Length: 381
Image (cartoon, rainbow, N blue to C red):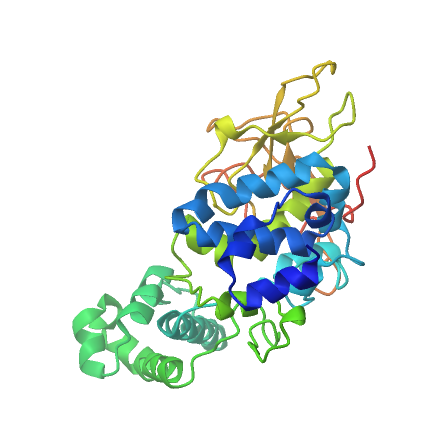
């Protein structure tokens, strides 16, 4: 069955046809859009637990079966991947900084509930308020900034949404002091009121049209979120760690991580593709549930050698690939130390040079800026 006929069955919600598709057949496997749709909705029909336990394993089985399958994800152009997951230059900031405007990364627009949009809108407003406070302190020549609200306080304000001075005084320790009330109360109440009355809905990708759902019957051009809407698949909670929600609504983020790690999935000896070692897999369906890979060629000198591949935890500044074969040093907590050079990019930061040296949260250095990795390339073994 060709892809168009499959989409027709998908639109008609013909469960028997959807379930009968062989997702590893030649016709399905040679089209990343066809494979992802068939893989996901076959899993969906078998229940939430099946999506969580099988979708990513099927995806990696497909990727590792043929290097051309992986290249359909790595390629920026001429890939049907961008039909269901539109490319967006306004997506995640660090992808833009590292790889440029035309890097082919997928839009990671966050599909939040109304309450989550309100929470983040208030938090965003409070963050701006704190920045203004710092400017105010500088103008007044005040060096002691201990009065600036902590991140914990701002999160608590966004959570309880105080709408009166009485609630501020009663619930939030910061407002036990008259000087904080005089300086901060009105701005905080305004941030809460604005967040409730005019919540943002474009977190993760301002101005992108990925969230525009238009299920008008033109199903051949539906993107992934329109298919989810068509089947009434909704996230229970975006910030949950349920594998089901992650597979459904964080799949672009997962694929972007594959784009990052993909060029390193080559055995140093036989040059064949490394495959996941599921013995070390974390919670299935998680954003990065596979971090250990090995070569399965019996004739290879590196047969069954396990290699750790992950991204640098210095996500605010680096987020480069950590490859055990390159990053050989570990910190006292057992995590590999990032040894990549980084440079601050003109237009974002002042230009300097140095090393990342990040490893874990405890030892993380936050005075660095963005590392610029090599451009995503096609794998040729």
